[in-house]
Image (cartoon, rainbow, N blue to C red; front, side, top):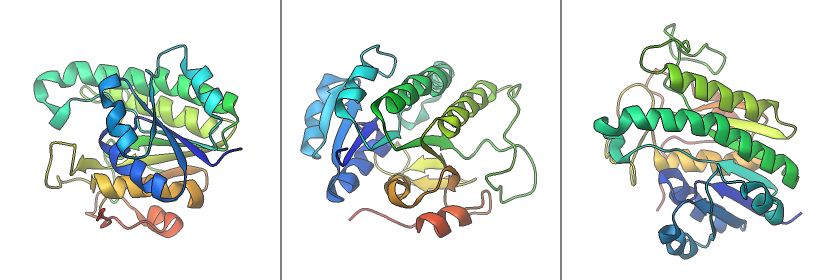
Amino acid sequence: MSKCVFLAGASGAIGRRLAPLLVADGWRVVGTTRSADKAPLLRAMGVEPVVVDVFDAALREIVAGVRPEVVIHQLTDLPYALEASKMNDALARNARLRDEGTRNLVAAAVRAGARKLIAQSIGFIYAEGPTPHREEDPLLPGTHPVYGGTVTGVLSLERQVLEAPLEGIVLRYGKFYGPGTGFDAPSPLGPVHVDAAAKAAQLAITRAQPGVYNVAEADGFVQIEKAVRVLGWDPGFRMA
């Protein structure tokens, strides 16, 4: 099998920071975007662009043709800077992406014979309880008035990734800030810079054992010892 990574969401905020790290490691990176206008951007980073939506029937054939060793799920559908007027619709779209979109991507990865699947989740929807929250702590209930749909989508994503017949790794990211996010400074309750988030995904390819990892800055909200110890991850990492 070729030394190849299939990066779903390569043109997103994390994908744009992650792709150069993977290329520098010597990986052949095939990356998705839903917009043909973004294909030149991906090529400039050394990525082979594929214009496809995770809901497209063609996805399975595309991934099967690539035969990646690793599939990385960095797909989201949120407005820039989390613009409040667009968030209600965005949360519903994102929940569907985490449920149906993940199902399609997992099926494609398994069919293609991928060895490992690394997926983006979120680490700021833990239920109330003692902090810092560990990966084993419960998440908010699906009946939560604001995040209920989000929790349902996240639980579906994580279950599908961890139960798939390959090495499933879930990265529970904190709240993003940095280039491409619309936020220049960290927020409270477990933020993470996009460069550090991308680095965690890069490290997970070769160092992570199957399971869940909190990936955020150590501000007391989540426990990040597992990511630091197992991945050798540094929340202060920044790209040069």
